[in-house]
Length: 387
Image (cartoon, one colour):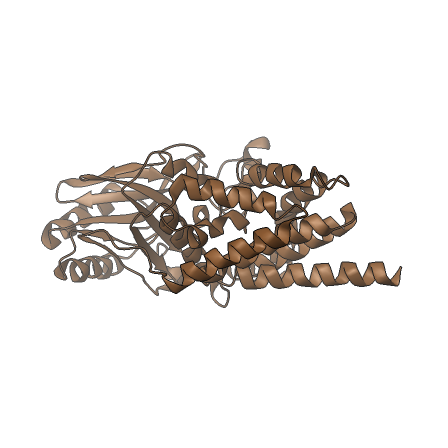
């Protein structure tokens, strides 16, 4: 009994360490997450599988409680509750699909990896090991995705040491020649440090200050300037006229985040603005569950919350190019980027407003994830974050 308890404790400790290291925010450490399917496969009971899965997921998403507390200006209690609730789908899927038949475990893990990648379970499918594909197979595209999927299944077999050695060699080679995704010619992403005030302070002076940021970026030769999520606040005709004038003066096109409000709730959107005016060209497919997307409101006849467009507008056209847009939370899950890549975009456009993540590694994890995906498909990358 003592030996069983010691083995279980070691598995949970190692899974926790894998979650912490793999999801530290350093892109080249993402392959550490590939240790999870090994631990999943060598567990001897469903209880141990549940504990290993919980240890990995809770460690990987450890910034959530503090982030929620900051977002709602509350104590850490609600954040802890959401943290635990979010882990349920990950733990449940991996626990149910584990089997005592070791020969069938690779198929069980493969099925779990697929289920946790797509809705409904994919809505909280954070910390997916497949995100490391771009580090191990940069530029391989769909072939690389297929190879890492096969590798994940292989790590759940009895020959996992051989598979692990092969993947480690690829990891070392990739790290030795690693380069970050390029920036599309004529494009510039602008990071900001405006905290919670971005998108909430609606004064005319704030809008003028933001337009000055656009002008500064355009003065360096950028023809397309990307600003973070929520930059414009609420999208109204007045805001459109003000920014159209600013874009005309800067002789540039601006892409920025905004919120489109109506009686039923709001859409978290990206807006493109040039000298001819502005228009909404992207509606977020998956807003943050809980804080933004609140589908239960409609069950009780209430309105409010952000709408989820799920599989809408995976690729958008901006001038002569096609972009794969990802707003904040969409960078942490799998299916939005894969859906976009099915349409062969010219580059990835990633924006976020992570002021509430201060003191956590959430923004760094988002950057690492989207960098890995861009490297996998050899696409340029534009990033603009507010912190």
